[in-house]
Amino acid sequence: MKVLIVESRTALCTLWRRHIERMGATVWCAAGQGEAARLLCVIPFDAMVLDLEIAEGSAVALADFASYRRPDCSVIFVTRRTFFSDGNIFNLFSNVRAYLPAATDPDDIAALVEHCATTRLS
Image 1: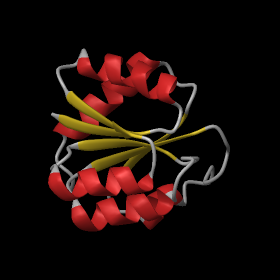
Image 2: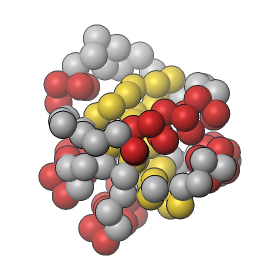
Image 3: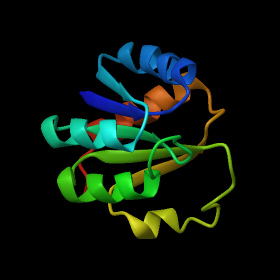
Image 4: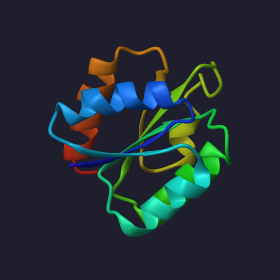
């Protein structure tokens, strides 16, 4: 299982990475849109954890790129805000599987990543 975490806050990315790696995944971290897009071009990720408030670039543009470049990559959005709280984000991208608060327990994020990465998108 190959997982990409796109998170500007290094400590949080490292925390999530450790929990997801315990599930047996290989994990890459990217701090922003450019770095993540480059990785998406060369690695067939099974899942991507994507912070809506990344410091560099646009998470929405990156999710759109992932839906085109890696349509089988499940996207799990995390956020510190209530933006998209009405569920519209699921209508925008065919590969979005979840929308979580960034404060979600790291074990729960890892379990969701494992589930989404191993469940075939339809």
